[in-house]
Length: 133
Image (cartoon, rainbow, N blue to C red; front, side):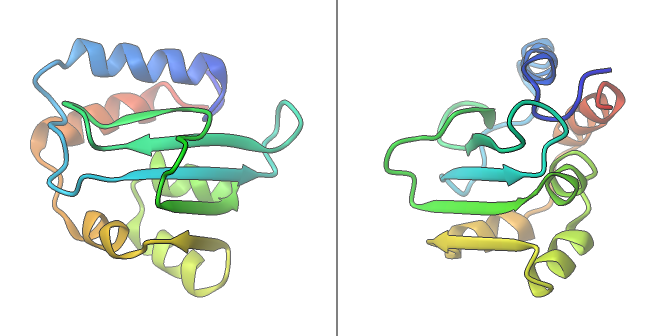
């Protein structure tokens, strides 16, 4: 199984989204967030990625979006528990403990975290969990 945020994982995640064209509809919170993930167990240890909910489906990919209003910085284990494990409690604890740092506009990010995922989004999240090392 591919490691979270590796090139192989990105390909697998995109295949899962493509297999569910009607799933994971665009978020009501239109936002672009850059991610800086440290302590990755591969590459040079730092990953730059982004989350974009402005299109027809949410997108996570490598690289940053120019002009994204929000950046999240965290370590690999925390990012994996939040994005793959969908553990909102862990996210709040990590934020309060300083393991997640946010620069820029936090308003939409907080609203995104409060939303309830629909069944199709939960199915996609489960499929991504199943292919993640």
